[in-house]
Length: 239
Image (tube, rainbow, N blue to C red):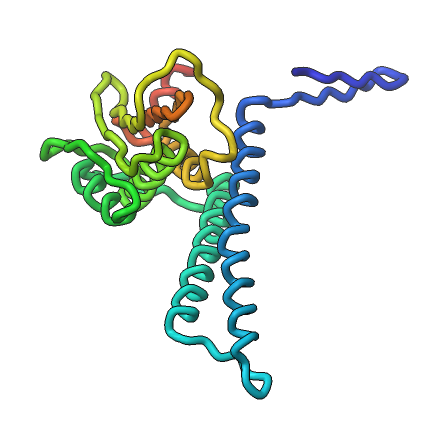
């Protein structure tokens, strides 16, 4: 959508609504706002319970209450750290460290992050490598698996597949059975999806998501060449 404002005189002001990127940005902030309420609510509940057990004005927490509080604070801090990192990446303040990165090792490490909440099925043959930032790829894989399960069938299992194209390595995360009617990604995908998407984009990749009723398919394409090499090719063509 294009909005043009033409005041009196020769000067004009043109505003463009970038529906693609700006839409993702708005949904990402919506997801963050939604998810941050959960740990905050837990903290308030714990504090209220502790207040009821207080003596002489001091808050007393038993082991379970203290554990719940610490977990909620950790979740809140992680969300805040993720948002800060994405903001810094968008402003070019975070450097990406290209591989080599072993895809199989990254997948195993991602399974360690998802734990018992989401099982990532599928394997990667030994020796599959690419010029990707290993720590960020691990987080992206875990995030896509978490998001796929959340907006898919919620079974706790996400099928992982990979495929090689001439220019990229394609990673696919699928939950549920394909359906004819699809809809766009939205805030309920969770902040994990938007964070993972930004991590892949920062590595020079692309992300496409297909979503339907109890079905989700996320495809992340990772480049097989370093961003510096791609930039050099573009420069050579321009000359």
